[in-house]
Length: 162
Figure: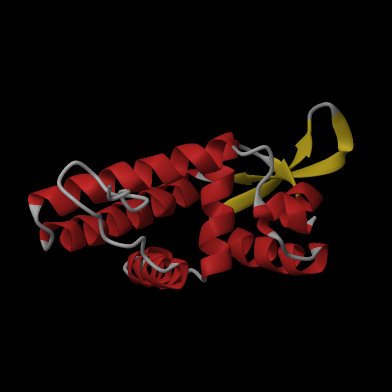
C-alpha cells in the first residue's frame, strides 16, 4: 500500500513548499516597490515611518519614539528637528508633566501621511491588477493573515532591539 507524501491532497501530491529565502526576497521586493512609490514630502524611510507612527499612535516622548523606531535618541532628535522645520510635527509639553516634551504630528503632517498612504495603495493596486483573480485573492488573504499574526505577537522585532 502506498503511503501518501506529506502535503499530498485528494488530487495527488502538492508542490513543495516555497523556499523561505524566495519568500523573503519577494516580500523585500514588494515593500521596496511600494515604499518607493510614495513621493509626497520627499521623506526618507525613517522620516516616513516616524510620521506614520505618530499619526497612528498619537503624541509620544522622543525616547519612546526612538525606541519604537529602532534608532538612537540623538538620531531621533535630529529627525524630529527636520520634521519640525518642515512643519510636519511639533513639540509640545506633556499636560501631566510639564518637563516632558511630546512629539505630535501636525495637520500638514497628517496630509502628507494620507497622501503617501494613497500613493502606496495605488502602487499595490497596480501590482495586483497584473495578477490573476486567484492570485489576487491569495495575496489579499496572505497579507491580511500576516498583518493579523504580527499584531497578535507578544513582541515585535522593534521591541526586541530596545
